[in-house]
Amino acid sequence: MLKVASRCDLKCDYCYVHEHALPLARTSAGVLRDTLGPAHPSTMAADNNLALLLIENGQRDAGHDVLADVVQRLAVALGDNHPDTYVSGANLAIAEKGDHVAVVDRLAERVGPGHPVVRALQRRHRVRRVLDPHTY
Image 1: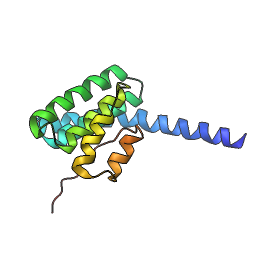
Image 2 (image 1 turned 90 degrees about the vertical axis):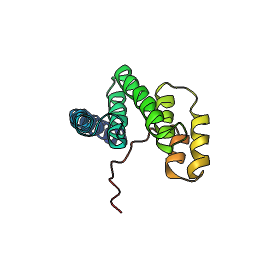
Image 3 (image 1 turned 90 degrees about the horizontal axis):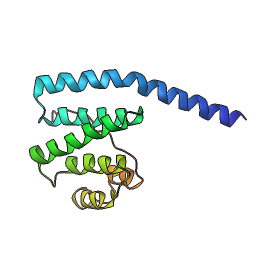
C-alpha cells in the first residue's frame, strides 16, 4: 500500500511541475523567437521543449503542430542530416506513435550508437534539447 501511495504522490508532483513549467516554456520560447528569430538554434530548441511539455500536459495536437514546425525549420536551417533535426524528428515520430527507428538509426550513424540521446530515443523516450550557449 505504501508503494502505491508513493507512486501516486510522485505522479501528482510530476504533473504539478509540468503544469507550472508550461507557461514558463511558452514565455521563454516566445522571447527567444522575438529576439533571435524563428530559425535560430536556441529558438528551435526552446520550441522543441515547449512541444514536449504541451504533449505531456495533454495538449497533443498543439504539441504535435509545434514539433512538426520545429522539424521543418531545423531541416531548412541546419539540414536534414543534422543531429538536432534527427532528435526532433524522432520526438515527432514518437509523438505520432509511429516508427522512429529509421530516424534514430541515422542519428546513431552520426553520433554513435552508445550516445545517451540515441539510447533514450531507442527506448521511445522523448528528448529535450539543452539550451547551452557553448561559450568555449
